[in-house]
Image (cartoon, rainbow, N blue to C red; front, side, top):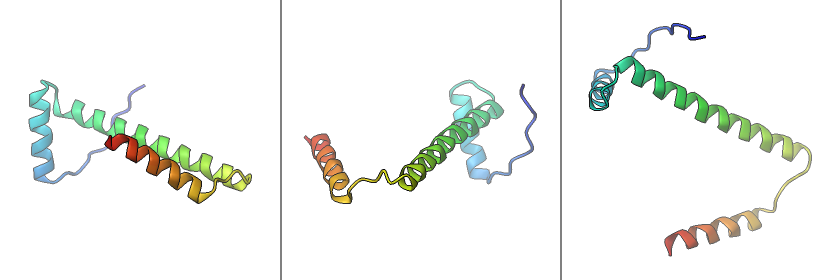
Length: 82
């Protein structure tokens, strides 16, 4: 069930850019803003859930050595640069 949202206040530049984007994809400005908010909420909700999992893992004593994690990420970054 879709509920009607309250109004959102945006500065003129952002509102203008949203209008240009909406025109470029032939969609209403309200549709584009709704999609942007939906994507933001999904992304942030996923982040919050991941943080909660990390907290629960730490509380349970499931921790990783900092140097091991650092080495893993440095290796991954080096492989991306090849």
